[in-house]
Image (cartoon, rainbow, N blue to C red; front, side, top):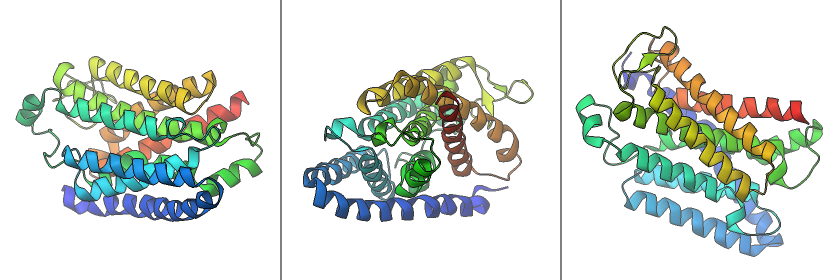
Length: 291
């Protein structure tokens, strides 16, 4: 099935994430303006700056940069807490994901252009940003936090120590792992193999993995998980759960790619969105077990 025939899935991903992020940003801005006005200033200012820089570096289209700004602001608000500082919010993990993706997409670009798998020079689209980062928004918003408290999975500590923060971090770790694994694997991985059959495949084939690409993805997940643990003032449990869940999501992504995407039932945005969701779900399950 042609890509444009599945474009509705990309639109659905946008519809599921951006309205939630936008509503949360408006409500959180009003709330923080009354409690800690400084939080509003550096949240909106730094998220807008990140979006502007991303656009100027041609890593994202204008629409994608705007979507990234909204998502970053939402994640910063949902993880802000004493001591109030932008460096103790989700800003740093999001920045880590962005830098890892930016670097990985530019490794061996000429080779990727020959394969026809290189990212568009104008940068990522809004749907791609929402597919990679949107799940972190959905699992860290007010409604989900209220459910978590009522379900007694949380001890009502600071947002950064709650299981939902770990789930959001796991989603970010998976997003980094998926991008780095795919981009590095195409250049350094040699002949990849299908996850479902272990048969050799062409580089860039949906669902095909390589040892080098997988190791690079695992390292990327570890980097994001480690940075998140430090900046969000989490525990070692947050580190290993978010990293392990991110790696789980990486393999789930390949499984969806080898099956539903190759069959023409899912497009890449839907696969990425579901894969980050699998990482977040795994993290919540693991956090429930270790509590």
